[in-house]
Structures are given as structure tokens and as C-alpha cells.
Image (cartoon, rainbow, N blue to C red):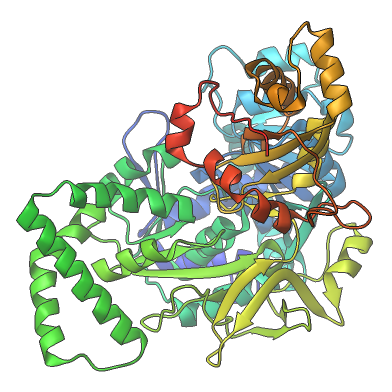
Length: 630
């Protein structure tokens, strides 16, 4: 490739030429130990796969779905599509079939990379509803011996070529690389900055996914900004484990790694993160708050279990380190006494704590959801640069990130250099700049609603201090962002829970910054009591019925039936039954009977907190569920 880095593809191949035999990827296949792939080999595999796709008929700006968990073939498939000038469309492996159908049809995808036979079976179940898809490409076949590609092809009566393996596509490309290699180079160089690179679908307020098209220019604007804010070197080992279907991992992980060089290592899954960190000793980690909190809890439990004198020494050292970080954040010079204390703390405690967390870990960036200040402060004190950022799919992930050492806890930092920000009269953050998308894919109504005179409305209420640091104070919209950073539209779930259940009056779902969803549910007294009599239950009042094991068990099963097709993170794990309806008088409803979520959250805070209290959960006889009257 010529040295003309005007788009993601040419930058990738230039990076291949620069890095050559440096390790590009580290990964496991099955139960084998970690293996390494050099940049030269990575470039070869991407080029061959790109040629295979071109031979099958992929054209520039065509759409290619990637339906898989995070894995090394995910990014190879991505860059093979982009090398053709095509547009990749990620799909969560946990997506419902209705969402998969909508995404593939809305984007008009022509090819779909699928992780394994299990996910292939899921998408083939709706094959008749996917008229634009020509072929499915299975990335890791043979993972489940009970399901085979051949069996699925026969079951669904598919024509030849409808399902291929990744290796078949790569081999097809290798056989035609002399013939098609020039075409791939031509397509790569011909891709313009304003051309689409990807469409990432995110849940809207109605629950219907909205496609966010991001151009090469959008993504490169972020990469360029990040080099000034968070520079990384070719010697970095970056550990990838968050979903590549999410904009955070995709932009700050995959594309920034490609832009800067270094090694991208893949964890076997979030459940193996600790083991893989010990094996790989990464220097850089992206986290969502839930993961960072888990690491912190594990380290803290070890600290709390230390003997009396040792515990006091650790606590003293951490307090000294926290004071040092606070002074650095203010730009102040350390007092001599504090310097001496810090040297002692570093030698006796802090260095050992870093060894335990990760001997080479120097940078942690938290995003996707608001982080816990206590956790951020701990890692910063230990000596690991730990920063919180903020962004949306529509802003190509980060639009703001904290700086080091001037890190202000409780804020998400100032905007990136290329991003302009202003605050509306209502306090809503509005932004514009090179990394901001131009509108939703095939959705002009949503686009019109999202912009105000060229400024994108983030939906977040903020305060900005004199130095430009942004503090998010509230969410303008109802979208829930759980502790893993997943966007959840509550209305569709609430509607599903009420379907064909006349005894259910209102459902209000909560779960912002939480591990799972919980719901406050109100009953229609007449319908509920009538249902109780039909079942032969003997309760004299609605209050008794709301507290009954019988009704809770019944609703537990009915709610599960109604959400079985939803991803696990969209399923309600616990609920509280109220014996009275929400009311206008209590401020819980508007005059037109719309629910005021913030008021409901305030009025029933003790009940909602109880649904997230582990001690309460352990004491509940009916697992995962609580019921109560007002």
C-alpha cells in the first residue's frame, strides 16, 4: 500500500509495513495456549480474506454483518470488509432475533460473519426474512459437536455457497490474490474520508435499534485526538475483552490500537479476565465500572484480610498516595515531608499492590457508564493512571476524557481537542465536531430530533467548570445505562411485561449503573382480586395478595415468558409489587398520566434499594423477587 493514510484501511496496511514482525495479536483457539500473530501475518490474512470477499461479490459500501463475541477473527473480518471499501455492521451475540432481523434488513447486509454454529442456527431461523444476505461465514466452526454446518444447511434447505467457513473464504482469497490483490489495493486507496466505515446500532427510546453510521473521518478524528490526550507506544500490550459490538471497545480498542501500533491480546471472556491478565501482563486496559469495581473488590478483600500491623501500613500508604495524587491534580509541588512518606509507601506497599493487580499495567480507561470515584481514586493512588471518559455511539465513543495528572474525580474531563461543547438553556450538553455523526441511518425523523442547528443533543444534563471539565448530573432521557455500559430502552420491556396481563397496571424499570434490571409493578385491584378468586386463592385484601407467594411465583413465570427473546441484560431479575397505583396526587404521574421516573425512584427508594441489596436478596424465600405493599 502507498504511504497515503487517508482512511482506516490505508492506515492499517501502512501500520503492517512499519511494524512487520512485531506481534500484532495474541489469542487462544479452544483450550490451546496463547499464540501470537505478527503484523506481517495479520496483513496477509486480512488481504487474503478481503480477496475472498471480493471474489464472492462484495462491493464498496456494501454492508457486512459481524455477529460474534470479541475474538481475533472479529477484527480480521472487520478490516477485510473495510479493505474492500465496505461497511461493517456489528451485532451483539445476545441480540434478540427481532433485533437481528431489523439490523440486517435496515442495513441491507449482503454477508454476515457468524461466530459459530450456535449463532448460525439462531440467524438461520429468520433466514427467510433476510432477502439481502447472500452468505453466512462461520468464523470458529466445530465448537459444538451437537450442531454442524452441514446439518443446518440440510435442515434449512440452503443452496451451495450460502454458508462458508472463515478458512474457506480466506483460502478462496489466497487462490485469487494475484488476480484480486490489485483490486483490494485500489479499493483501499479509493475509499474517501467521508465514506462510511461502520454502522453501529443502538437502542432508541422506543426500543427499536437506531443505526449510527460512522465515517472514516469520524473515527480518525477520535484517534488523532487520543494521540494527544492518551499517547501509547508500539510496545503496549492492550487486553481486549469488552464487546466489539459496543462503540467503546471498537473505537478506543480496535481502531486506536491499529492507529498507534502495539499488540492487541484477547481474553477468553470476561469470566477469565483475571487469569488472562496474569498470563499476558497487559500494559493497557479499557474497563466498564462493573469490571473495575470487581478488580478493586478482589484487591480490597486481600487488604482487609491482612494482619493488624500490615493492614495499618497498607491503609497509611494508600492515604499518603491519595494525598499525593490530589496535590498533583491541583498542579502543586509536593512538600518534602510528603515526598519522603510517598517514597516509603511506594517501596513497602504500592509497588507490591501493582504487582498483584498487573506488573506492567500502566493505563486504565473507564467508560460506558459512570465510574465509582472511590475505585478510580484507589487505582490512581496505587500508581496506575486511571481515567474516566464519556461518550456515545453518536460521538464515535469518547467526546471527553480526564487528563493526567490533572484528573478530577466526579467529572469525565474536558472535551477532546476537536470537539466543541455548549450547554442548552435546559442544561443539556450539546456537541459538534469531526467525530460527531451526521444522522441516523435511514431514519430522518430520529435525526431531526437529535440535532439543533448542527449541534448534537446528547440527552445528558451537565455542569461544566471554569477549566472545561464536565460533570454529568442527570440523564434527560429514560434510557438506562447498566454497569456494563449497555443501553437499555425500558419502554419496550415494560410493555412486554404488561402484555395480556390485565391485573398489571403500571411497570417502571430501573437499573442505571446497576448489574441488572429491577421493576416497580402496580396492580389493578379489581382485576387482581378477580384473578385470585379464579385461582382459588383466599386473600381478603389487595395488600395480602401483593405480598403472597402465590402471586409472586405466578408473575415470575409470566414475566419470564414475555422476555425470553430479549438479551439477558434486558430481562428483569427482581420486582416489587405495590398494592396501590401510582398517582397524580403523589407526583408520580403527569396530568396526562405519564410516569415521572425520577419521582417514582424517590418515593420508592427504600424498595428499589432493597432489590439491589445482596443481604436482602439472600433473605428472600422466592429467589430474585421481593413483594411489598406501600
